Length: 242
Length: 291
Image (cartoon, rainbow over all chains, first blue to last red; front, side, top):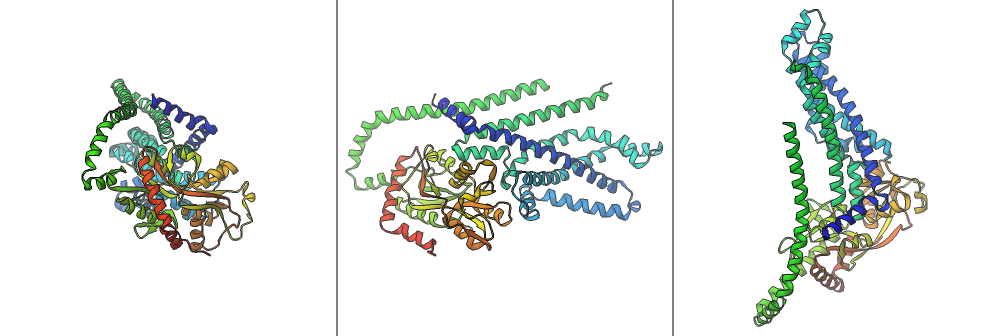
């Protein structure tokens, strides 16, 4: 009984007192905003890097142009640095070193977060996409080319569609990781979902309800994401079962 | 296959939730049971005590056994070591006023001191949930915190001040309206600023040093923080000044779990002895140099 009373007090203090629920609402908004735009940026970056990397790796040694070699080098450095350093550190560097002059307005912090997470996610997406492209048998490219399609057209119509089907689960994984990892934006002072719970904890000294609440909220968001991804996967598999 | 997985997952979740629930219920039950047991054994204990009084050594043992701590024989102190001169790192050691006072207290109580560095806003919760024995972090006594933890007598006075850059147009607390204010998350300064100027303009950082860094970069217009760390920060960084007007004056004390009144009383006794014999003042003087 005592536990239930405590829980009631916790729920009251966490959600109703001082309109605290607004921290959660605003927090969800910011978390989603950062995730969605970081995802878009990450996808664009990732696909670009993956195409450069796999184009480089699949060309025969003597046919590689100097431009391709340089681009490949840049991409490799990018992948090494981003995958070799913690996300938290990248965010701190972006905010306090690279973009030190920025004022702490919400808009600025969100921009910084999107940029950092996008660049970070891009590196992982790049390797996932590359693995997808590399997983398609060499014969597919040869068949496409021998049918008169050029390199870009073969990529677009033959290789990429098959690759996407293969990498969807891994891509979904990355997406989910990205959504959850946005919680580290608290260090630059951005009031996302996690910061909301932390502020409520520092106001009410209740840890149980706020943290369980955001855990549930994150879980629900992830469940929704996996549901959408599952649907997508099933549609892509439709032609498998003829 | 998917349905099976779904059912399994649901089962796991129910179990884990149930586990949470029954845990606390168990606690409640055991504490009730303990209380009952205590009552019934009180007489027996009294008799035992009387018997024990005969032997000289037993009394000393009882004195040492009076206070129970999270780890036996160790006084575990939680603090946020980015708050000079109360607590800060010197090499890999946490030093400062609070660390020395805690050391003196631990010696008085016959315990060894262990310092745990954590986020400031987690300290009260950690004390409450019994992860640490005491929170000594230049912590101000305030009613919200008192709902969750007990405080010992005060050992120092803190003042919330406003740090601005030297060329700032902010001259007093009245000018803060609409400005971006950096604070240390969970401090009383954070509370006051949120109450006075609204959530929008208050940017909470996990420690004071980061807040000051943000001020240096021009990310925020001012930082509201306790006076002593403010002095250290201003001394360490060019181009900052502290406004003459004090924002809020308050008392520092040690946070102790509400479930451990014996420890609180023991600390109070020891603390008052240390205050009376001038040890506390000595420590304060050592770190706080008058201007």
